[in-house]
View 1 (spheres, rainbow, N blue to C red):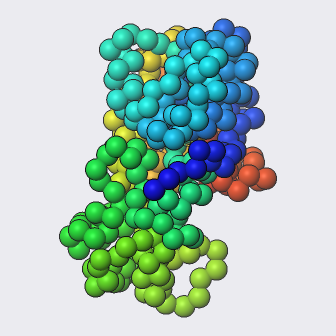
View 2: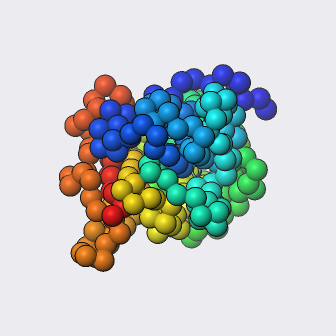
Length: 296
Ligand SMILES: C[S@@+](CC[C@H](N)C(=O)[O-])C[C@H]1O[C@@H](n2cnc3c(N)ncnc32)[C@H](O)[C@@H]1O
């Protein structure tokens, strides 16, 4: 299987708001924990000019390769997941003035059928951001027990229990399911009545993606590490795309802010920045939420 060398461009979400709230300054160091195709990173690094003390992380090797244009200018690229990157950087006692996490998937991941993230085109049941890992969507769809499938579709897809039960039974009955299109069709057949905006397979695909990449576990394990990586006065920005992610970020920030005089982090934007109202021209921004905190 070949992945295009020049994947489609990824348009960074809430870029102006990230710059406005995180307020990068000349000379500041930068850690991008989900660097993707370098949209946020190139804008921020252009302002700070400090490539040599900046580190760009992505667990997807295609994204990491595409960050070569920032490596050429002196930035360090780490092709690993953000939890392990943070552990490594804490061990090395490296700190940053700016840390950004832009959660979720990139446009190139979604748009390339070979990656198996999307049901709009036929592709393998893959969904691994890091293709060195073993677990893929294929294993989950074709081998997980009924109860485990039901749990991830209701928990990570937030699918209604009745529909989730029908989806799981249909998946098991139609095994082996060989690709994304076939899976989407199996789910669609279970849907009763008309649907308009959201394809009935959307929530199941979200659930599979979260399970394959252990996305919520990555966030939960990483959040408590971030303040250790910030210099005093450093800013941490996190963009989330669905309620499961945002709930974790919100809860973490709240627990930090509520510590009063003991708090290490203080809020920069009191009210969450909501892509639905801020950035209507970019369809992927609609569900984005940006929260920014500063280390005391
Ligand atoms: C929304 S994109 C980021 C786009 C980037 N901000 C830009 O402007 O180009 C999210 C990226 O984060 C990466 N990613 C998601 N979870 C990750 C994790 N736990 N560790 C490392 N990278 C992760 C994905 O592979 C993807 O490339």
